[in-house]
Image (cartoon, rainbow, N blue to C red; front, side, top):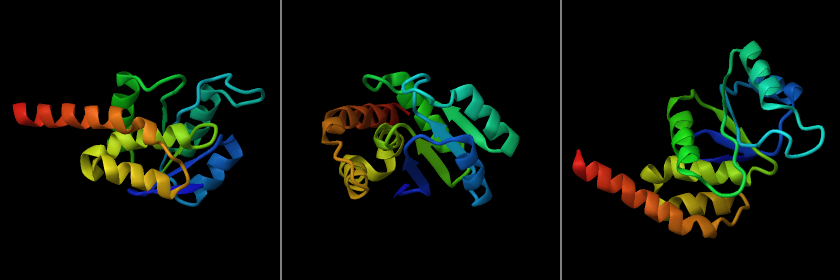
Length: 146
């Protein structure tokens, strides 16, 4: 498990028993960024959501495959802003979860801050610099309209 700023952890696929153990350690929310049936024997999002509900833990399923869409970004921003911390976000390796975390935190950390934090945990996501910069410009334009 790798820690990002803001009491957020990213990791690979979680199983129900792992979610239970993490909840017992104080985790308050899970974000599943893995599409269903991406790999054999992968637990379904519905089953993982049921586990989270049984544990009384917040859960979002924001599957990412291919590129990052505006809907994924908005759902991630909502999840990270509304969920109690600590949060564990997961996918196959934690890389996609890190990318979506970046979009949800670029307003506070800036593009370089986000990419530096992601690089510190072992992922080089320089390829999202341009989309992050564009998204940051859109946020700043909206702030200027307010």
